[in-house]
Amino acid sequence: MRASRPTGKSVETQVRRLRAAGARRVFREVASGARAARSQLQRAIAKLEGGDVLMVMRLDRLARSTRDLLNTLAAIAEKNAGFRSLGDVWADTTTPHGKLMLTVLSGLAEFERSLIMCRTQAGIARARELGVAFGRPARLNPRQKRLIAERYATGATMRELADEFDVGEATIWRALRSEPT
Image (cartoon, rainbow, N blue to C red):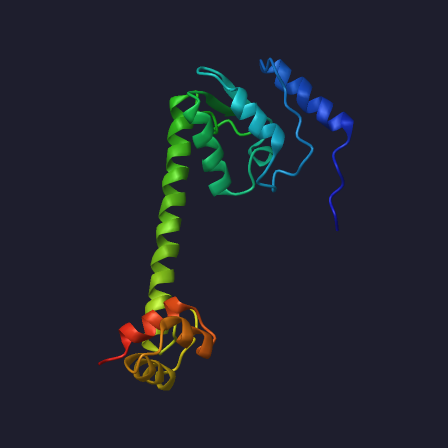
């Protein structure tokens, strides 16, 4: 079931609440928070100056994932600006408690990324143990490499060999390097 678009009435309610909280300028984004490229959010961040505070009604209006949230908060911090969510009182970088909560959240996200990397590396190691070959398939088999080495030794040029085996000259060069003489 598709979610319906917010009506103008709901957006106006949000605008009123933001203005009541002290917002001087309001950017309205009609795109979903799930989309990474949101032009109004980018415009709002670009307009931030030191000491400004970017306010949203709720965190889900700003980001849909922890990584997206942390990237957005980092962009805000680079502008020496603060962040505040009216609906999530703990998400307020203008207070020590809010900074602490977001730092803990950032640490958890980094820990999660580390765990994913460790699991990925373990999976790759296990696959290699089982004989899984990684990378592009070889264009030349060992027999073709031997033929190339023999033909090159008898005077064939790299270009002739590349044309004959339907590969690039770099592939011929690598085949010659890998073939024992």
